[in-house]
Length: 131
Image 1 (tube, rainbow, N blue to C red):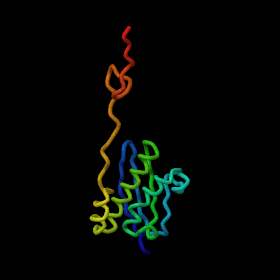
Image 2 (tube, rainbow, N blue to C red):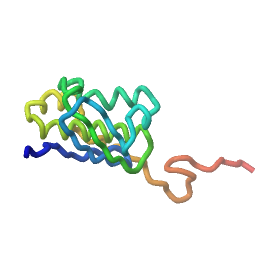
Image 3 (tube, helix red, strand yellow):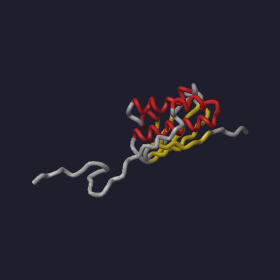
């Protein structure tokens, strides 16, 4: 019996973490056991997720199964794109140059700045009163 081949990777963005598995298939993308179009409402998020697959022309070759935790929808979409890109590297290491040039392999390190004491948020100060 032939074993099923799958390629796994982890993607991160902001507070989100995506555990991605690429399985040979028809190009379906499942996110937390739901269809991608049902999970992500915004078109920008959907196009962002599919970019690495389109660049490497593997969009109809692999099914993507992802488990995403934490953060909001835009961070989750970024984490999923990062995870798909890293999983594609396991499929074929020649994709590295293409994906690196587009910046899909770099983890976006921008995170929320911490709140400081005496302030309302990270930088927002209380309203100044002269009298």
